[in-house]
Picture 1 (tube, rainbow, N blue to C red):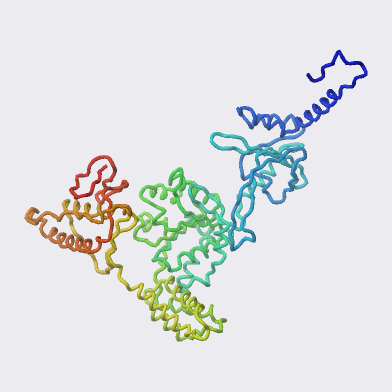
Picture 2 (cartoon, rainbow, N blue to C red):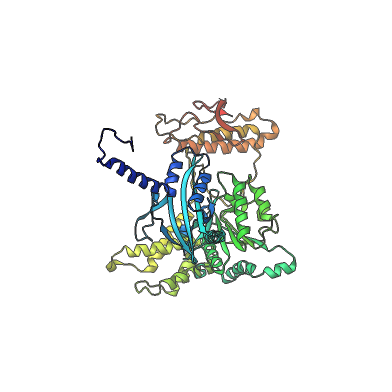
Length: 575
């Protein structure tokens, strides 16, 4: 036992064990006076209220200090510029490390280590004020919580001012773009870097069109007082539509860059889908937009973002029952015809529509001049004015993307040839245009695939299609045909047979008033079967439906009960 006197030892005996024990106990008591020791003691016990226990321990250790606490990651003083941070002495710092890979093209190193504090104490200095910061991590449900304790010798006001400055700084963007995806707003520095390359001089549009587009955007932000005098809400919506590859994206990037430079924050929405549903996401998006107004809210691919399920809620948010002053909504779509009339034609929502169509001859000539100017300093490239006219004449129905591909492919081809045997730039460019012309003019042949992601496609035709009234028996036959088409391919199956649905019932079984419609259907049906018979020999078709799918009548295929569709060799189920 420590400190026990031994009766059988003389008075001259010196008990070194007792002396060493006293020194050890003194050292332990000194260590136990730190917050770290008290926290490790608490962390090793049952956690009833870790924050309350830590607060009580810190108040006893720092009786002359005020204390504020926070769990908000945006209020972390260590990450705030201007704060000097020094770890506390005699207070161990425990952190867990992580690895973050970096872009090889833009970073000097392939990756860096990051640390997350589990327990640590720091001395802070900010604006001639000294603080003590303790950060601890503790179990909270199925995850972990992180609590920060800021102590200051005096009132709480300096600590609160420090946290307020941290919050304001974290809310601001620093060469970043606010991006909404999967239910969260986050800052994207990569997107900001990307839009810095955009410039109006690279947007090849007719001057009148470009100026009108710019005026509608920049003029909106300059017209707040005018809107107020007219007594109308200071909000506006624009839709950029047209076939892909004609300048919508580059124009959008340029708008985001210039508005950001003018102080009008761009907000970019990738998707409304989230863990909490589309309505939650829409609420979060418009709440952020109202908070940062005046700003630009960018909704790319409107026809994909807005569905039948979320359209009503989106329109309510867009109409701004809570007020959308200073909000410019900029939407894009490649399929304007797919938009609901409530978006495409309803006044006061999207009141301006700009068509980014395939360029006409003048615009194609402008694009050729654009490349002529880019290549003027390259002595190995001969780009005469006559080539501009040749390109403009030879590229009818080319989109800007096709035009760009022609120039880029020509330059890449020239770069791969020997200097002694190089043809002229003009000849190579015209060859590339011919190649792209063949791709553009080539009709899309009928493609038959049984994979879940492909469909039967007919050749394009500009001729109008007369409406065909199909009675229910015909729809059933089409459903059977689609049932075969929708079966997923299975490489392991040994069968190479394709089971075709039976032919429609004979004309004698049809009512007289349906004979004409069924005659047309009979011809279409037999023609389709002929195409299928010639192309199905090399395909493998499994004998059952693997997943739940919806047929053309709105019924769901699922493993619940027999279909009874009378298709030999095919088994399926109707839900």
